[in-house]
Image 1: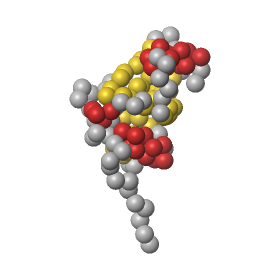
Image 2: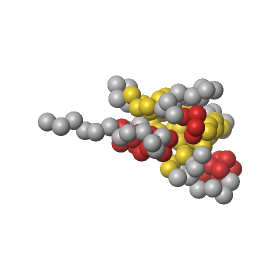
Image 3: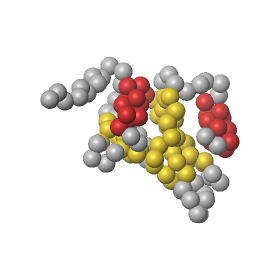
Image 4: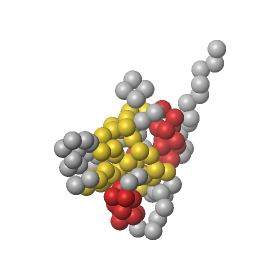
Length: 118
């Protein structure tokens, strides 16, 4: 993370350290006309934080209890977070291995998919 991203994370989380921080492959416009910035996903004990920063700031918080319908779409390579109220960016590109880690934190009681046996 760059200095602006770390500063926003500290402002949003206070002194609480995230359990997991992921830099997604989803990029958005936050005020730099020549480039887009990645969305970061941070998981805390009971909430999820999405953020990106440049000249403008994007950040959303969501309780983990509202993320129970989250899933990974292998066809698109995206973690899909279905929630009510909906997130502004509910689809986040990331590798499947990273999405499995995130989903394990979002719903620790869910079964982990087994690899196919030959």
